[in-house]
Image (cartoon, rainbow, N blue to C red; front, side, top):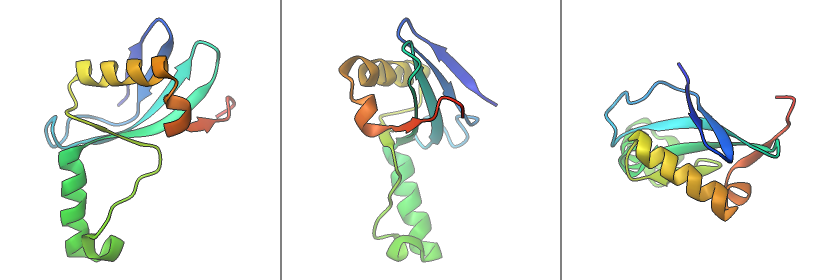
Length: 109
């Protein structure tokens, strides 16, 4: 399932079903297309989800048994309410930070 967010300056597609664990414990992939055609990909995660991953890795032995977690192009959200996602993406686009945080995608992807 995908969810699309339309804005006057971008369109964002969230690539996962959410919430699965509740709006406080989630992570999703997102593709953002700016009006100028630039496409960015990133990951949105909640702080609780980061704690969940650290706990999981401490059991599985991954990431030095949960001593760290890393995710490329990550933005941590307070929760996964649609208003929070929209406000966060609006700010990332308006501030220009999206080009520093998210990964630039080839427009043919």
